[in-house]
Length: 248
Image (tube, rainbow, N blue to C red; front, side):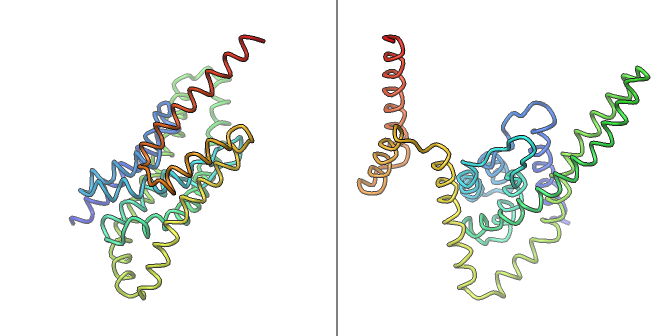
C-alpha cells in the first residue's frame, strides 16, 4: 500500500509538470532540473533527484522543438528516471541512462494525444458555428487535461509496477552491465554539450569555448567560477559589439 501512495505522489508531480507545457503558460517547471528536484524533495533524496535531473538537462541543452518536429520527452524521462533511481537505489548515472527509452516512448504518446486533439478541434469548429462558447471551453479543458494524463498514467504505472522489477534486475544482472549503464549515463551529458556546440559554433565564439575548457580541464576550476568568468567575457563581448554598432 505504501508503494501505491508513493506512485500516486510521483504521478501527480509528473502530470502537473507535463501539463505545464500545454496547460497554463509554460512556467518552466517541466525542465529536467526542476522535475528532478521535485522528485527528490517528494521522495526524500534531493541529491539524487538533482543529479539525475541535471544530467538529463545537459542531455537536452541542444534540443529544441521546431514546428512539427517533436523531440523525445525530457519531462517524462526525468520523472521516471529520477524516481526509479531513488526508489530502487540504482544510482544517478545508471538512472539517467533509463531516460533515453522513456523519452522516446513518451514522445510517441505525446504524438498520439496531439492526433486525438485534432478530433476535438473539429468538434470545436462545429460548436463555433453554433456559437456554443461553453462547449468550446469544455473541449479546450479536455484537450489540455490529456497532457496531464500523459504524465500521470505512465509515471504511476512505472513506479507501481516497475520499482520492484528494477530492484530485482539490479540484483540479477552482472556488475559489468550496471557499470555499462553508469558509463552511458556519464557520456550522455557530453552528447548534449556537443549538440549545443554544433548549433552555436562560430569562429567568434570558439575562443571563449577554449578558455572555458582550459579553466575547467587543466586549472581544475569549479564550474561556478568558470560560469562567472564566462558571464564577464560575454558582457565584454556584447559591450564591444554595441560600441562598434554605435560608431557605425
